[in-house]
Image (cartoon, rainbow, N blue to C red; front, side):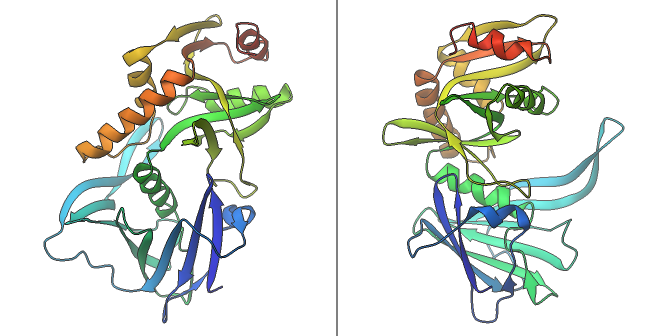
Length: 297
């Protein structure tokens, strides 16, 4: 296809190929996020190119390609994706480990206007412009520029109230989502959420990761920071403790003081309006009743 529009976390993102660019074929996980209409919040123009970082650009962040082997982190490549900056432009360069025909990509972004350019170095006539890891990187900087929060968390909607369960890998995000789903809740997502402030209200949204993902959102009634425990226990947090504890689970590229300050400001507002607690829990169905019975209904 030559162009398409996606609704992700309430943003309308239009992607279109330029003259000579590859035909666009987004992955299956985006198909239920397609939307129609002429309006958009961001335009991504896709070109075929060499993905060359401009002379004079400074590399400010670099992420190696890692994998888990027998519980240990192993670096597969020191060159996975990197962030470069020159003047008011940011250049994100990446390789695509799961897309062999695509050698590299470079996304050029700026705060204004909402038109970004994507170069793909590919042998193929058809390409996925949002192949991993570019999809998450694009969404991260979109949230950063708009004062939103991308966080490692699962989220559910239970009878019109949303609950966010945040933690790093292994803390029980997916387990908690499954237990609430068994109790009748709608799972917004089980791994990664975007929290947005809109017209004085706070919402959280899913991000497309799985093939059956569709746009979902809820209003949070509580944020829980997960810990395994011998018994179920809720420990309320407030003020700077709440902000710093939630911030530890946010996705963040801390190369820019303005980005860090913006995240802290957003978290301060969210944590000032939504109760934050540390949740020690046993992975069993009683945890749903326990949370609802402790003032979270």
